[in-house]
Image (cartoon, rainbow, N blue to C red; front, side, top):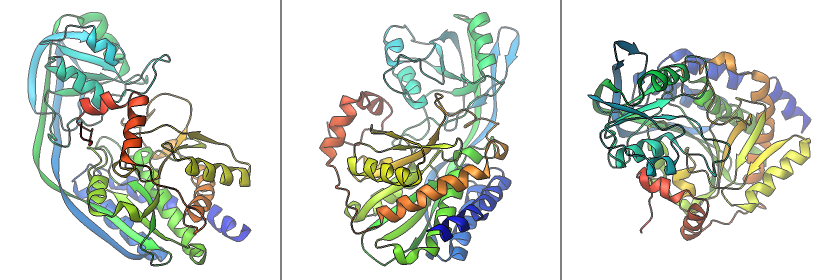
Length: 436
């Protein structure tokens, strides 16, 4: 055991790949940079020794940002468009809805207004309310524009897509503003008319998923996943260059332990995650769900030192993590609830066992993620190496013939979504895949 740990802890394969990804620049879904990232990831997986390294392409709705603006009184306030916002200009009174919880929308008259909401939730909220849910609550209540205010200070406007699977381009123009600009708008222009303008190019585009494999050629497989794309405003180091670097580092470690794998391990780096989980949804539609033993989805790893595992009600997944953590006397956080975001979800929603692996700091939201500050200097190579040790052993455990995680029925997932107050939000955003 000690030999592979030493090799992993001195490896620079994952970190070098992370540097290569961030140096590409723009990795927006459907862009040439995303394609370059996919090709680099395919090639490094092949060099490591993973077999059948390949790209699988699919069509997506392309979107390229132009200039955006907010005119308020005689002032011009800094903002950026939210991806897949329609190109449009609207003028209407500004309503500051604070956190933008569902009940806040119920209590407000928003017809013909521009709504501003924060990017976080209060400590008393029962669950996290996603940006897209807030956006579509605004749409349903008659708003004509949407302003998304970062809760993190530092003059950093947040990005993040709108749109649904059925209608990839959103219904009303949407922009992100920094915490400071949001405070200024609320103080000076509440209930006053402001103008929000978004310019964007909407076009057909193509994205791709990267696949490669290790272990025996079994029908059943464990998926080890991440996403390649990032928002165009930053390097995308935290979200999610680090996740793809982790997949590469795990593949490198598992190539040395391949004889211990009793089930095929398939590494998948998805495209177009940031615009609606498009790449993972494409894969989920094409693959036999019964053949997937488990998913280990890396989205948000390395940002902080402690790993967090969302286990979606699969007790056996929680038990496996606890066993690995106990083996190394290393702290982890386990969240047994459902997490209907990121690339595990197109599978987990149908009862496929899956982890969402990220790191936790205890803060709400993405921190530097989805802002200009998502850069390599926020990460430490030590954290990548330490977390890769735990995750390597976890994947070996998941690929063991002795490890069986029973799939859950879609009805069980639906019941949990309703019990955990997640169903309403998924229906509002067009993400509810079930009948009824």
